[in-house]
Image 1: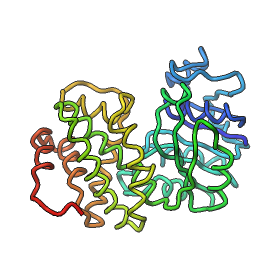
Image 2: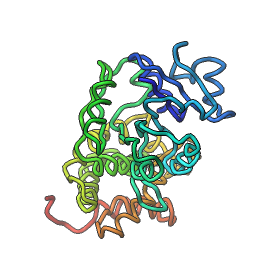
Image 3: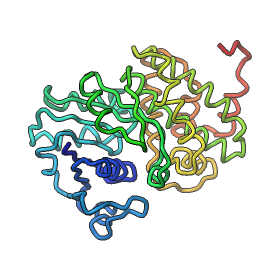
Image 4: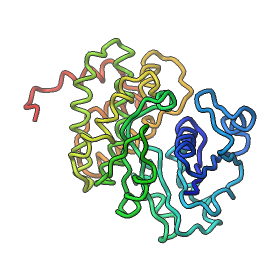
Length: 318
């Protein structure tokens, strides 16, 4: 399969490395001047991913021409503008694969909806989500992930084409739940980092349990299957997001309460803003999400806000 990967950050570059490694014809794209793509051109590495000579590099969006599939791994809030940039190419019969997690703040739309609104109807859209970090995959540590799409044939084709000993793929069956769950786990990751910052890591078990419950409620209210929150898109991704030293969202949360600067992208910072809008739209109570939002955007005291979560009125667990 001829594949173009748009986005040369740590995840996009890993996806390109992985797909190239299992035999696909891959081009990795990054805008000219982007440090990551410039380093790849010079050294064929970004410090974590070492790419083979078989992989092409490009700073020209023309690299999408002739691709069977276009993998997108960019910050969620620029997805719509990227799709506008692709309009002049008049792409048809292409599969867009979203290897990114988030919800558009302005509209509250899932990322697959953003793509579908901005491309020809002959094109298919799929999402590739689940746990894992490039730093672990490149060492040969396997993991399980999910591919989902509203088009069953597309889903099957991608799972069959992308599976290997390194990644075992499952067929998703709820694109609403998978997208919302994958985005929301980054918010829980920020909360977990805040607990780490206060040396309250023992509360992560409760955070994970209650976090999954509230995300399940939102998924159900949006028309998805509540049980999807307990799968690889959300609960199954907690180890990588809530505990791992490689988790940007966890590290961001810890840095926030320690009042330390954090430079890397933490998607949960943007996702929580969209999540609060969805809470209001669907009338769903999400106390953890709301607490994280107030801490990040309303200058609420983190320790006090987190403390209130665990001192709420006594009630039945289920």
